Image (cartoon, rainbow, N blue to C red; front, side, top):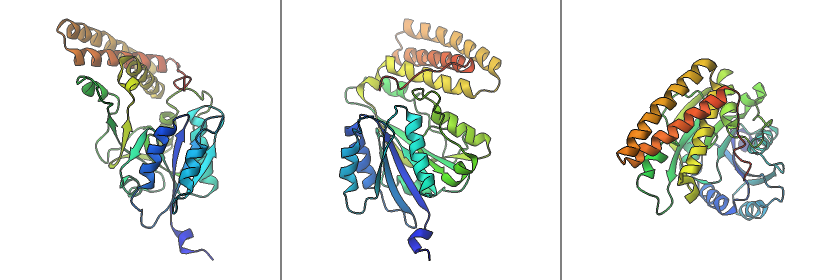
Length: 304
């Protein structure tokens, strides 16, 4: 006979991590402080993507806390899609109804999970809002430039794809479609976008939920132009790979590069720092679109 707990829907909250124990600790502290989700069985999972199991002590410490149901998973081969698939398999094999992902450099608000679960339905992926916390001493002009990195949609908007930085996935539907994260290029970025775009093409819905808020902690290197350029280029590749009309996408990106180059030159001559850097990032994004449309990729996580 099934107990009332077994009859309740269940959700597994997964954090994929590699060699970032300080950030992981902050993330898990925020998850430990989540408001209770009435009617739901909630469990946590730390997916350690380091060969040496460097996150095990942190996971063990949190697992010992009373009332915190935390599992430690080990995905020794480096690559974020392998870590995500480890969480996916564990969730499906243990019959969880939903899987939530949060990045290890993010912290959740107390009502984060409740807001995601409010929209929990079979065949529906829910993407939450990601706010960004800038490091102390960040130049004022960076704020407007950083805004290009995370563009949150209107609440309730239907999305064509999304990242797994703040997401709720219906495991029964994903299992039915045999959806997994692409492991062919384990160090490449954008496998989460490919996953959600594939889900959308199979008929699943992706909705934006701005009440489900997490805060991403940006380290000093991530507010520097070299990192921002690489990020926009990788984002452009993801977009280019999704486009069905490749020739049109390439032509449009070339025109954007020409236009933004003129804007960049004018902004440089008139000492408009923010406008100059925005234009530069647009150029790199468009270059990424061209690369992605032509089949290019980049090992975004090779140095982690």
